[in-house]
Image 1 (spheres, rainbow, N blue to C red):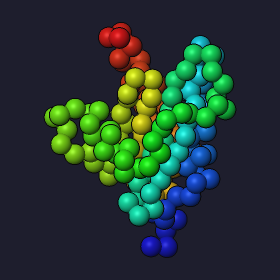
Image 2 (image 1 turned 60 degrees about the vertical axis):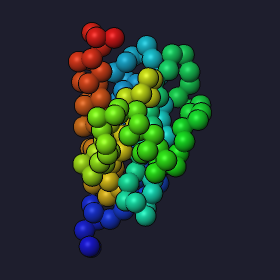
Image 3 (image 1 turned 45 degrees about the horizontal axis):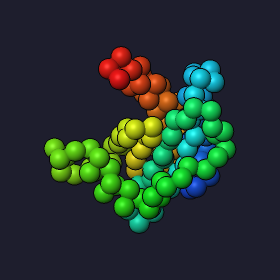
Image 4 (image 1 turned 180 degrees about the vertical axis):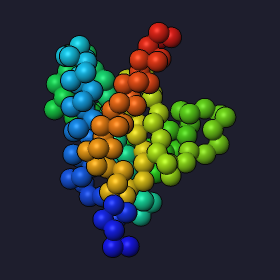
Length: 137
């Protein structure tokens, strides 16, 4: 289709999205903790993924170790993390899954999912989720 928002995003757009999410979360934490991230995508599968990691005292520029950046292998791993009740992981509308200090965001690869506006909305959702669950852990 000739509409830009449904075309596949590129690595630069996905990195800008990741940078905006990290910037917002790091700004809200006021230096108490650092969030850094990495992106990957599969054009063939039509899926992109951001892996965010929360750290104490690390620099955001340091690379994330052992992320398993292959999208399909990561989706299978996320399905296992989600538990036995989740027989499938469906990223068609987007998926956010927390695993210890990491957050996996999986979403369609279309440009509309990787805008800076989407990043602001997702950062707000992430912060809200953390605040809602912080009393339990």
